[in-house]
Amino acid sequence: MKLSSRSVFAIKSMLELTFKDENPISLPELSRTQNISLSYLEQIFAVLRKAGLAKSTRGPGGGYRLGKSPEEISVADIVAAIEHRSRQTANCESKTGTDKLDHAWAVLNQEFFNHLGTITLERLKDDSKDQQRVEAA
Image: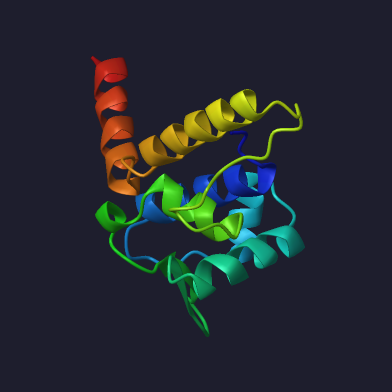
């Protein structure tokens, strides 16, 4: 399984929302910090909002926040929303034409996707904080 750049940008943006906790972040601010075009980010967040992974607040001081708690959002949830996949049917099409290889690739792809389901935004946030403590010591 290869993560698309769209999925990578979505994951990184959702991580930034995780680090900002409950404070909304505007898309122009995310665009600057993530070095992503604003229009591309708007498309990504339309999908994330529709999936319930992000929610928006209008007006001054508005922006985007996580739609659920960070321990409820896995990397697989983000990828599934962005790639328009069901978590149960996330598989990759192989172009080899060999049934055994296609099946093996589909199994490997599913295992990878299942592993992404065990990685939550909260875990990534905690791991990052632990790494910062180690580097500071």
